[in-house]
Length: 358
Image (tube, rainbow, N blue to C red; front, side, top):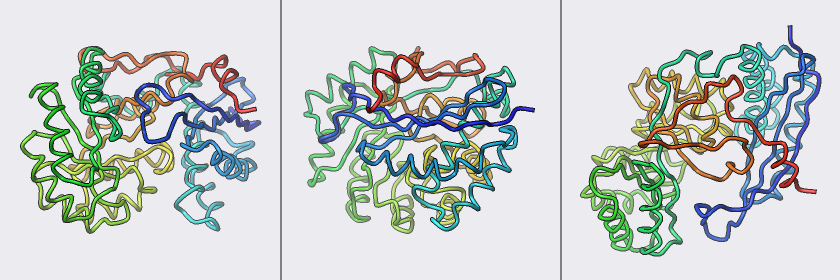
């Protein structure tokens, strides 16, 4: 029986890649979490924040829960999750407490897959061995020429799907930018748009109707995340599927989304949903409503979920964490093969040391 004997954290700052063009963001901060066991296996996970100063808050919450995982058998992921959930009741079951539970839960599952000698998706119940991927790197700050150049670069890199941001004050400006990208990539490439919660319901509906001419795969987060009723209104008014959920916490937030029909596609985020244990519950609940799931970000981990859940769809490929990993994500004909090594994608000790915040 394996026992967790220690918890360690490291903070790093990863310089922005070309695709990390997001306002003034030039880097992303990451909290790396390691669970050491008495059998010599170390489980790892990470959390991120655009402002590295916020990492101290995440780190302290993780460390608050340290005593609750020391001595535990990491196979007991459900018991550990419920223990951490109860311990976090004072802080509330949204926000930083769920981030901490997520990091510890995912590190436990990382131990489980290494000890089993299998890739995680085969432990969870395999469904597929590769997944379709989309490049998530066209930003609102880019000029039309930059959008076209990067879209073509993504196609040359093997992608067959691309996501771009919308959110200009004038509807016509967003329509024109989407038109330019659609013409550049052609009708066979899947195109998604993401508003990052910027619009009112009326604005989202008016824009969404104009964008239906471009055969979009989805319209993501058209209204603020808390406005589930508003998102449901947008979803009911448009033929284009509405994708949302990256800001929702745990199964309870997603239950409300499903009951209100606030989205046609759910996008749980590993950190906010509460880790892999809770992610799988959300995916199963969505399947009961015949709703597809496409995890938000964390591609090195999300790929394992998509390999397991029948209602899984696209892998979001963002390069934010890529410099931390030993292996690259390789896209071939629009798809990414799921790693067959028991550890999957692994954090690179040399990269950690180079990028460590001192």
